[in-house]
Length: 496
Ligand code: FAD
Image (tube, rainbow, N blue to C red; front, side, top):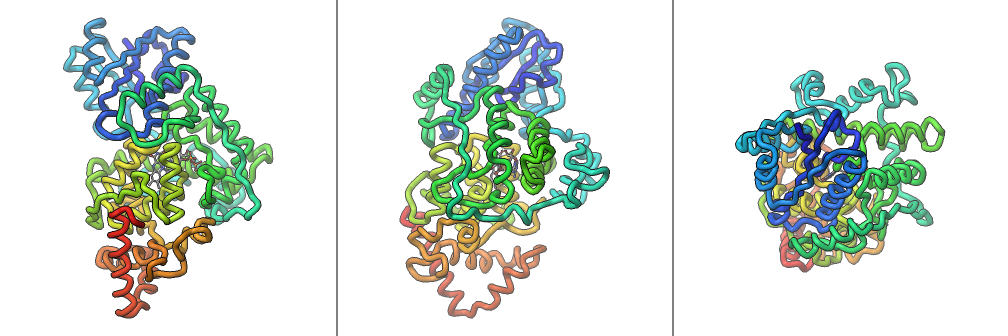
């Protein structure tokens, strides 16, 4: 029997390694020819795999590390060396992956034993037994998980008497606030060599220099410690804020490590709760963080599992425009978009509100094809994997599906103005809707509501938005439509 570790299953104490004699890691590259992945994403995954190989060898495992174009090619070599071998694999979360891998193994005369994925706290069986089949509601799931895991609980009640401190997570920092430092993990020789090879070998999109992501378990643990000590407290109040020139603010930057398996969700949650118990972070911040990891991350995985393959095909609003060139990094005078795209280009990262209320908001209002946006997120972000990117982009980001959200997360320039300092220094006027210097978000927003009225007016919580639209007379609406058409044309032509 050989344990087969996929490139995002790198936790050295994963249960799949229990009693393992041999370990197989396959560095397959064919996938990277299909899309212009961010060089830091490819570099991160391959460097983390190579470091995991070395660490497992040091820990005494007999590790075979195969570099090949495809899994099939590597498995041919594996079964030539070990005919009929049984491979033990942790069930991958991407739709259909387990079946595809089983076929590859069995067609070469081997067998595949699947074990549970311990990178999550809630198993598919537990979720399915809990879920009553009536829609997917995050808040219900989150409370159930808090009770089930006994996190921030006082008996059967939440500590502090409140389940959710969302209201306290929407502040903007004062002008004189500077975000706490972000740790940088300088590439060692192995990582450097991997990054050089990636940039030579593949057609990529994004900056390859400045790589500073954790690639080993030790570095990921340092990143966690650093976050808990220096950024967890301000993470709470400033979770939704955006500040010019700052890509991370007080966000944890832990998603790439969690999704590679370098960190486990429970240890991350425990570290945050421990800070609250030591009075080192307020409950509003700790709960806000726990909600993301124990709530949203786990929830998204199950929504994805339960709604694929329909999820990835969906678009309630039938949008089909190509993504405008600003998503390729072409400059725009919209400061918020320019900043958010440059964060992705430079690091393969943008924080949640930039992803949701800038990058997805603009694509949604512009009418871009949600599947194309999903692809863009998938190749551009260091933490992107199909199971997590897809529900975030299609559900939360673009309202291509209403399986777990009752309304689209769209807004005019007003939201960006409230949550950031971008608008004050932007070439566009956030208070204007029409006219050449009007913030493009404004006309696009009203035009979007007008355009999709048939689908959106009746959905849950859109009443207030439509009551504002209803107050606009025909002349105003016609000017809005004209301005929205101009904005779309200029965005398409790279002239925004
Ligand atoms: P923090 O803000 O510090 O949050 C802590 C952790 O909570 C994250 O590390 C992450 O593990 C988890 N988390 C928070 N929100 C979510 C969520 N909605 N779904 C899943 N996990 C969550 N997250 C990814 O891991 N990969 C993606 O490809 C991805 N694509 C996204 C696309 C869009 C359009 C949107 C709106 C969100 C996306 N997210 C994705 C969720 C979230 O934005 C990122 O997890 C987060 O920004 C990562 O940065 P961080 O580690 O600093 O997170």
